[in-house]
Length: 317
Image (cartoon, rainbow, N blue to C red):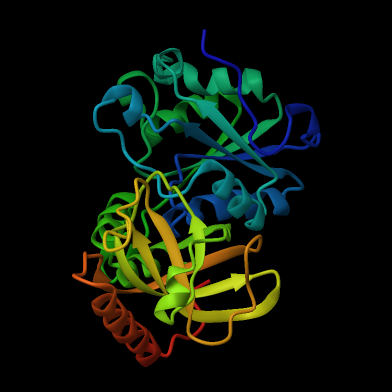
């Protein structure tokens, strides 16, 4: 028997007793195509006096089927939950993707779901979504099963941008290459990191470029290197342009885990303990080891000037 549904954002008893409109998918990255599915559920729920929720899966199914090379996730679950709340989603269900769950026959998936969510009125998926044992189920089968179970089924067409389909796979490839300028339009927002500033070793200050140090450990690591960024935080309103280095700092310490260091181009109102959102806008160069601190200092000055020349405006979202 597969495990019960696990709610990431609310408890089952906290859901209002209203018709439930459920968007289903991994929704990794919450890109433009994902939001077409989710927004359809939210809008239909509002129009029909219901409530919208999302069913996603953890871990990624690839962790079960090819554990030696699992797909790395763009967004962690806590970030995904916060993001979905901003889209009008009332609850996020994080279903454990176990062997037992993966073995549910496609024809039994909707009845299984209906038993756990008695108020389920409609489900929303992408047109290419597959489900059930062996991924045998497709949208046509889902519609047929929905008709038997009294559940409406809606599928959103694939979203294209500049003639190319928007996909998490493509976004992962771009992030791995450091091409955030190309990834951001597909996401529909500026790729971001967030974390709490920690006190560092003050090396940036001795070089003349003080930094804000943010431990950040995403499942999918973007390319190590230097980026032009914008920074937002609770202490001061607005967006602050800056330069960020994400990597292992080979010139100074060859760290065991990547660190995100941000230098703002103007006065810095932030310090240790502040929670920041760092929006990645442009890749400037790969991380590399310099022969001396003087050589590093000269390169950072060039990075700062390159970021200034970009004259960063507001991000996509």
